[in-house]
Image 1 (cartoon, rainbow, N blue to C red):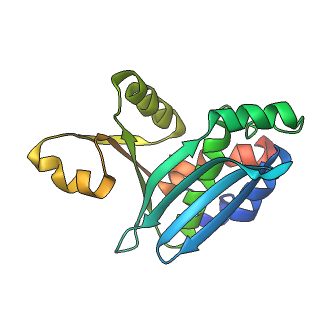
Image 2: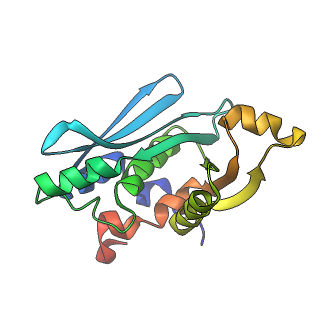
Amino acid sequence: PPPDSLATLPTQDQIISFAAKTGITLSLTTLGPGYRAVARSNHNETQIIGYCEGFIRPGGKILHMDKMEVFKKAVARARDENPKFTNGGTVFGVGMLIGALSVRYGLEKGCEVAEFLAIDDGEKQHARLVRHYRRLGLNVVKYVGEEIRDIPDRMLWGGVGTLMNSDMKVLLGRYKSVFFGKEEE
């Protein structure tokens, strides 16, 4: 599908507001080209549930999504302690919310493409990650392995795995109905 215009996509405030309704407090901090989106349980904001961090690559068109982590034990604890906690309100959960906030930030800074490395630290887990990120809307670019030709990518990403990317407007546009409801699309 063609990309949406920036004006029709969820804003940072709309993403943060939606998250609050699901029991999550989202925040975004930046320093230079770096960013970090953090999800906390809104009943106990010292409890970090997950985060996504990275930077805007030199040249300004690529959002480098360096690391995303959701803590299963923290999610389970938030669910046990807070009846309003609904794991982000979607099947993709907390990770989708911190990813959406990061993508929106990148769009506002002029980025066009988001890149992410599905790390390969075990065959089964790697396959699960690639499948998950494909369902979210990322495309496979290539496998970054141990070959000499992969050294620049390994230096950039810090490991081996499947390099994935997406047009950021298309990616965030996939989730408009989550943030706006079906009637407002």
